[in-house]
Length: 85
Figure 1: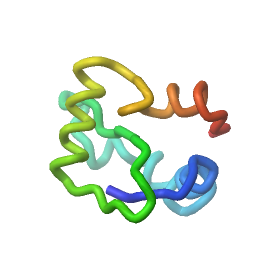
Figure 2: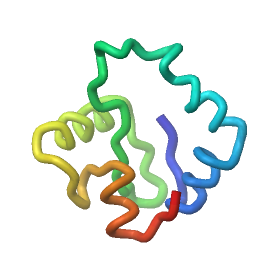
Figure 3: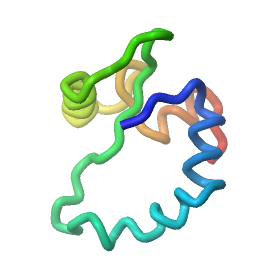
Figure 4: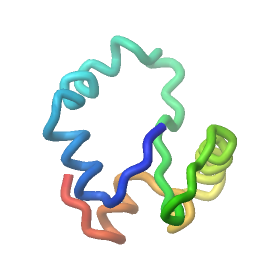
C-alpha cells in the first residue's frame, strides 16, 4: 500500500521506473486462479494515513458497487481526472 500526491506521479512510478519490470512479471507472483481485485485507489485528505482496514474496506466497496469517486481503479481515474498511462 502506498500514498501518492497525484495521479501523474503514480503513473510515472508504475510505468516509467523499474516497477514496470515487476509489473510485467506479476504472473510469477500471483496465482491466475485468484484473479480478484488487487488494486483500489481513493483520495485521502492531506496528512491522513490510511491503514490496512481502510484499504480492505475500499477494495470491498469497489468489488461490491463498482468504480466511483470513493473507490476506483485506473479506468475511472483516467476518465475522471485525466491520467494518461
